[in-house]
Amino acid sequence: MPSSVITTVADAAGRTLAAMTSGIAALRSADKPLHPEGEMRAGTLVRTGAVELTGASWLDDLGQDDVLVRVSHAIGLPGPVPDIEGLALRIPSAGDDDRYGDVLLATTGWNPLMRHVLVPAWSREQTFTTLLPYRTLTGPVVLGARPLGPDDFELSWARLGKDWQAFGALHLAERLPEQTEVSFDPVLHVPDGLEQYPWVERLRERSYATARRARREPMA
Image (cartoon, rainbow, N blue to C red):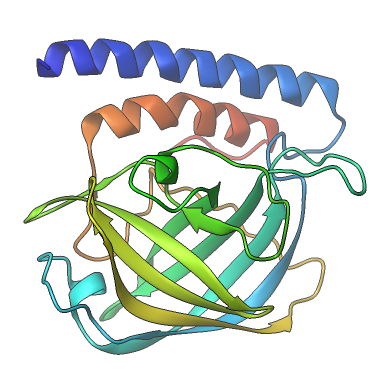
């Protein structure tokens, strides 16, 4: 498909997502139109690398990161009603204390098709992905997290239509005070070695900008 067509479709979809975000913001009193309910956790991410290299240092290199994690409900539906669950990570950049990357995952299926489809969480075994791909030196990859227990996840990446390759393990530690709030933004902040495709930026940026306005944050 020509890049101009992809850009046009992504731009139209982005406008639709922004309109939906504005509508949700207008209907609720919370400052956060999306993911209004959740908790902040400290976490440790141990990166073991994968067998196949992507050219992205965060995925390929061994290491350990102290991360901030937000576990949340995307819509904020009441009680037992299944909701889209969110898992957001803030990862420090190597060698630069002022930079960081944000990765936002939501509950989806796990197979090559359903990993791009949002799925309400019916159990604690629900898997998470980024839905949309990141660009690496070796091509597009989707990131995913598979629960191994209440506070533990296996992190993986996959090429489009291919099997998952584990590259790390995430452990959630203590719950942070309620006033510890972080605004995650995967458009503005990308982990080391990963890039957002222009069409992904177009798709996401309008809705994130709308959410930032709802939170009364300065625009970048």
